[in-house]
Length: 422
Ligand code: ATP
Image 1 (cartoon, rainbow, N blue to C red):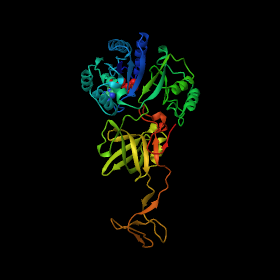
Image 2 (cartoon, rainbow, N blue to C red):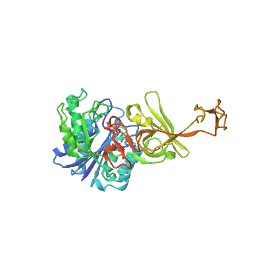
Image 3 (spheres, rainbow, N blue to C red):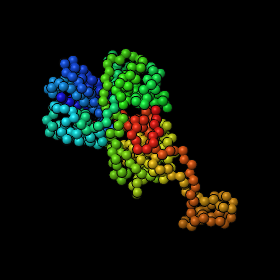
Image 4 (tube, rainbow, N blue to C red):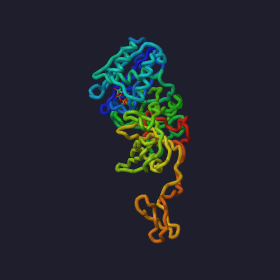
């Protein structure tokens, strides 16, 4: 067996998509008589600054010999990669041997690529130690994702599927002709095995990209045949070609179990803590709150594009115990989901006068409260029951705002009740 890792062939403005390049490599190998066992679509650390969009890297598992595989991959990348874009720096890594039996260093490299950061030098060192064939273009940054994809089959246990349909090349860059009603009907028929096809709350067909590349739509789910069946129900322009990828999308592979004091920029975490400041809606519609763990604090934010998710965040109260998930950037955790572990059911308020019922006033620093009219006094603030509409359990951003690698609640396996968005 041979594993081909590929990355960094596409451009935000000029188009292309590394999934299309991998599909082209697989087709070329099949046309030459080789078997292609599977093609992996691996999402690396979403916090990496060099990414074009979703930080995807691809791996092709084939029975072609390593030299044929390297030759085919090199020719396809050379012809397809958008290297005129400064930010496109392709890399191809080819390894001889079974995909599940790569060296430990490569397995570790893949795990770190999804949760943390690597340098090009480190990728080269690990690839060379494993005696892999390497080819790079321009600054060759793609070697990082290519090596990560090569080791992914051994590094990860959880795989989902995405069935991607591609447009005919003469239509790339033009408006996509996809019948929205048929997408909603396909999504309804296949849910919950197929997820994140549409955003019902916002009436959006999230499986149809808006960028200029070759993808017509991508249907994601837990079962490959259900993804294909849902795709077959979508009406629109002719599909030029299609492939079902195995992927770490929808698995939360990027999340590290961390703690507030040690959460660092550029990684994504699950963090436990207590809501320490009330949710605050700011200009632009973003909602912020503070999370505390002992004396350490971190700011959490639900951005405007997360739409209705912000309503759940706004209903948090100081004292609630939560687990938050998301990427930390500039000291702020960008919420992907959160779990309410314990709801604060009381709040501290200024006491009211037992005689006249009016709110008391402060009697001065450290001197409690007093009713100016009746002369009654209270030592301090009093606790009042708090009506809560949030429930214990997990809340998530809607499909339109989902990160590729983030696990939708509908997939199950969470440690508390779930409130899935669809
Ligand atoms: P698309 O989703 O449209 O395919 P993309 O978002 O995958 O595009 P790339 O063009 O692949 O973006 O760019 C990501 C770059 O970051 C690649 O060069 C890849 O090698 C590199 N990279 C991936 N993971 C890491 C990491 N953990 N640390 C450092 N660099 C990384």
